[in-house]
Length: 181
Image (cartoon, rainbow, N blue to C red; front, side, top):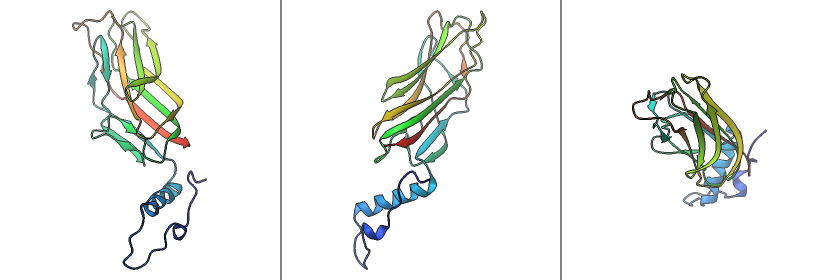
């Protein structure tokens, strides 16, 4: 089932030799393409280990575009930006996996951020005296406006010092898929 209804291009503009097509004609071509290729969405990830502030908040680097169908990503893919004509309801999915969590950490917090403000928070408590948080994940519905930027951050809890073993994040992932206007 198409996400966007298909429009016959001649109903928007009937090309003639030497004429210039209006912008609406190109917008219609883009919408027709998306109706064929599927849902507008994007998935960003990073496989390289990253230092996480201890204690403190770290905005995670998401340097690899796993797939992209019409979304806008930042220069190094750290953010997913909602494109023109696709404001509405989205499913947002986020995951962070850790190789180690310091024994002084009481918890690890993962925030999905919209324009820098948290729209969803997951907290994983330490499972033993030596650490033990391995991954945090969530999938949420959320309404986004055109130009909204989604990013992902991790906050280590208090009771940590710079001398504690720092965790290495091994694979964050952030994805957003448009559902409807």
